[in-house]
Image (cartoon, rainbow, N blue to C red; front, side, top):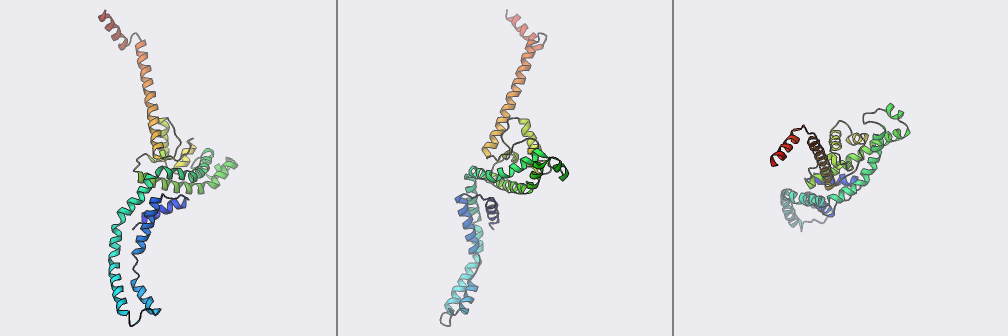
Length: 266
């Protein structure tokens, strides 16, 4: 119970990112609920016997109190489970309403990791071996040495970014969350292919010249819309040029039809 909240809290804490207050409050409530499910009445009674606070004079009252507490303890886990939906909703609402702020906070650890991954991508391919890297020079060797730590950080950021996307119900393809804006639809398709290729997706992207950037949902969607608009305009220009070429050709069907229309109108 509440394991997802605990895991998510650890993911963001590991990156040094503070969750929104709404989510923090929900996480604290979840922990308090879990603590309340631990039955201590029997242990408390035994401790009171050992320390002398339970005597012949009050043992009957103590037993009654303990019996009531133990009976309640049997029902507390059921009551605790009944709170899961409300607590989870409060926790994820905090993430959803502060999604952009969280993404922007994640840029600090992401940019640090992205710099190393970019250096690696510029110097050697994701499937390079030690010999290839050494041959590429000192800068490549340094990137290779720092790459494991950078990939670990990037993986943590990607985990956090997926959590945010899930909370937002953001269906934007994942790879668009990690590249700087491009307006070429073909480049976006290339990024998609690289993202789904074997190995480190971010390394693949940098090796093909992409710049890494952590995007909000709106920024990712804006990139797609801009690329589609650019592609549509290019297609319209090609179509217009083709129409103009047909009109300029006096032997084309379009030109002949226009000439006939003019003759009939005269």
